[in-house]
Length: 72
Image 1 (tube, helix red, strand yellow):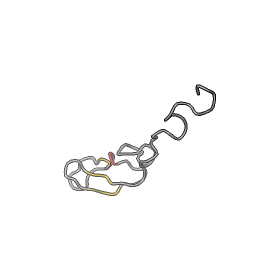
Image 2: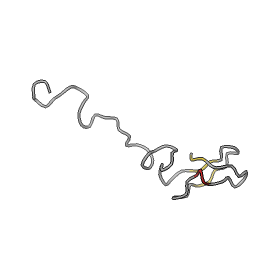
Image 3: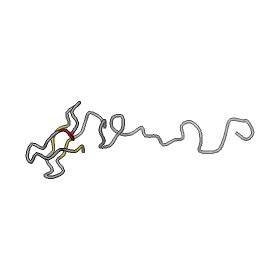
């Protein structure tokens, strides 16, 4: 605010940031805590199962080959 008129430098101030408001859950993406929706996928054979709330994909074993699942 060089003149004290409240304008400040262009592009700065409230409402101008990119933020991380889009995404799933509290952290977004495929990390733990990424929300209730989504799928668990086997990295070895590609089998997909529904993600169960409260049970992380990395603790589930693939029903076909037994490999630990990952979050998609």
